[in-house]
Structure formats: C-alpha cells, structure tokens
Length: 243
Image (cartoon, rainbow, N blue to C red; front, side, top):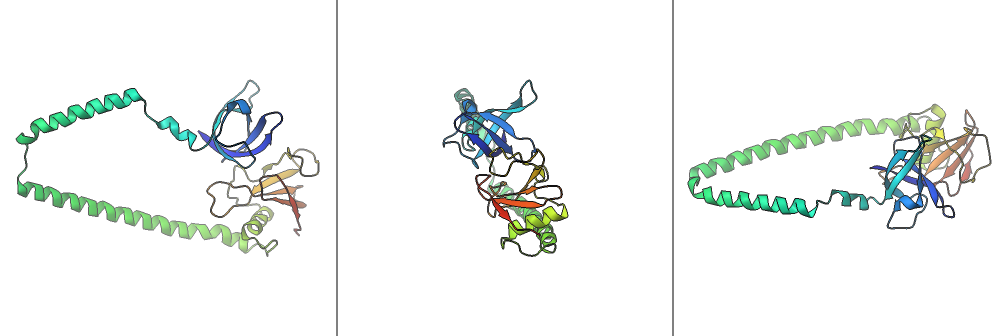
C-alpha cells in the first residue's frame, strides 16, 4: 500500500486529496472508500491503494489507518490448521527417532561450543556493520544543514524554517526532491488568487517526525518574490519577510 497525508478535505461534498509520500501527483479520494478509525481531517497520515480512471486521474480505492493495514497479514484459519497438523507430524517423527540418534555428552559439548563460536562471529560482524553505518550517517547528515547554515542568516529563528528558505534561494538540494518545488494549487483559497503555477511549495522538516509533517513554505513568483509559512498543513498561513 502507498502512504501519504490528507492535504484537502471537503466535508460537505465528501471528497479530498492525499499528498503522497515521494510522489508529486496528488491522489483523489471519496468518502465511500474511507475506512478510518477517526474522523477525516487535514494533516491525517493514511495508507491507501489507488488506480487510474478513464481520464488517467489517480483515485484511491481504499483509504485506511496504518494499524488497519496490518490486518491484511493475518493468516486464515485453514492455513493455521494445516500448519498445526504439520507441526504435530514433525513432533511425532522426532520423538520416534530420538532414541536412535541420542548424542554422547562429548558430542553435545562440541556442538554447544560450535554454536557459541558462530554466535560470537556473527554478533561481531553485526556490530561492525552498525558502527560503519553510524559513521557514514554522521559524515553525511551535517552536509545538508552545514550548506544551508552557511548560506543564510536567521530570518525566523527556527533552524528548519531558515534552512528551508536558504535551500529555496540556492536551488536545493531538498529533503523531498519529488515533492519540493512542485506547484501549490491553493485549493483551500487561503492565499490571494493567482494564475496556475504561480505558487510553489517546499517541505519544512519537523523534528521527531518520520514523514513530511505538516509544515510547508509556499513561495509566489519565479524567482520567488513572496514567502508564506503554514504549520498546520495549509489551514492557515503567515507571510515571511524575506530579502
């Protein structure tokens, strides 16, 4: 299943749009396809399946909570019965041959030592791999913030917001290349009406959140001449003074 955040919801007409993770095209959904444990609201993180209609538009066929999507992996009763029967047969076979293959104490000791040696070897290999991965992350992570920090002075006092403004002014690189810099359609009508393509949106990372979060900077003009900040996923905006 795909995942994303509800970016638009029309309660009266019962439809909305999903901002898909790592995809620039939004997905339309209707209330008839929704299976959520909570009322629908903007900024809600969901899982969904989608297909294209005869007009080549993406439409969600099922929208659910992350927890509900786990139910698909629950095995059927028939499968459990077959598995339990197979385990019973295997257990019976082991019991019938146990007396023929009983190991001596010396053989058991050698086997135990061999198991410990293999475990120590693989544990050391895993520790080495984790250490190398941590070192690589430490080397890579600062490059994004350092390049942004060196390119601007504080504008709002929020490091993530100021870094995003700096990346916009220098043309990237962005944390979500497939989404940042795409057209913002102003469907909610919160910003002044402009021609299509006038507004662009960029992700402002939210500390402690594994997905894109609800914070965005929307710019107007190309190159940008106006900057707006939303921290509640397009529900409200405030204009930023950016030179």
